[in-house]
Amino acid sequence: MTISIIPPLENYYTVTKQDQDRSSYCTLQWRRGQLLVKAPGQVLQPYLPSLDKEQSLVKCLEHSPVSLVRIDPKLGEYWLKVWASACEQASKPIFLRIPSAEQLSKQGSLWRSLQRLFDWIVALVFLLAVSPVMLILVLLMRVYSPGTFFEREWRVGKRGKLFRAIKFRTTAVNKKTLEDKAMSDSSPLCVYACANNFSLTEDEQNVTRLGHWMRKYNIDNLPQLFNVLQGEMSLVGPRCWTLEEAVRLSSEKQRELNKVPGITGSWEVETSNKLHLDSQTS
Figure 1 (cartoon, helix red, strand yellow):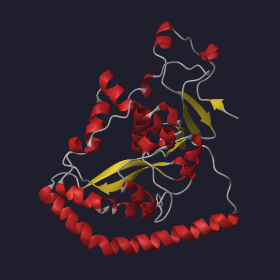
Figure 2 (cartoon, rainbow, N blue to C red; figure 1 turned 120 degrees about the horizontal axis):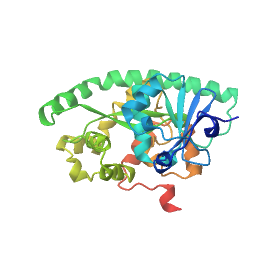
Figure 3 (tube, one colour; figure 1 turned 60 degrees about the horizontal axis):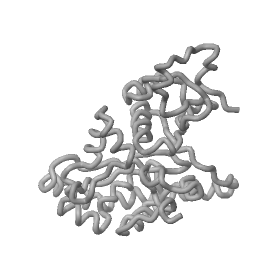
Figure 4 (cartoon, helix red, strand yellow; figure 1 turned 180 degrees about the horizontal axis):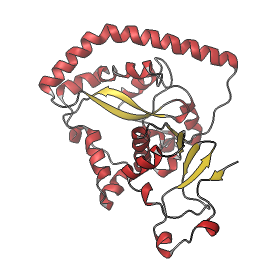
């Protein structure tokens, strides 16, 4: 049973003309400790200013009994990133609302546990083995590409859970920094740019020589071994979709997001020059 987190308006609220003009971009519902963030529908709710500002949203989440947040991909990349960032700051897990997969047997659960143990051991050994290489890369970046050593990109993990994938920074100007600056700007132009998949070309990103070399051999993905240790990724598995890509997938393709993504599956696709999504080929 789905119960709206907003009480019936006729009993508790008077919806003014101003509220109608400033309708919210989403509808909130409460279900068994989960906060569902859905696209606007038939359920009316008053205008909630705290939903429009990230810091206000963070405070609301911090003081709420919400155990996790499930958000509709139809809200678009801009609002997905706002909610993801707010949940990250409030220490609340956030998931994309995706079609559920078939329920797995106990044998399948045991196999996944063994695979998880295997991934953790192999990732730890491999991380120790390549640590000298990673240290050298850090030193080279400090000399030839001053700035942060890593960048953390939103990816979609098991059952649609959003997490930050760790990669070596390959650009002189961090793309994420520019996007966050645009998102924090309250001007309608910046909001429109983010909502319509604001992106930079490779030249605009200013990829460094060291960055080109790391991308060529996928060395920039080595820090994702830390994601494997945290259980967010597997060594072998389906592609780890970015948040921007996941919102464009068809409903059938989104079922793959129920599985634990793999590093190898992600690396193989990243070597391609073109990205083919179901929404573009259908």
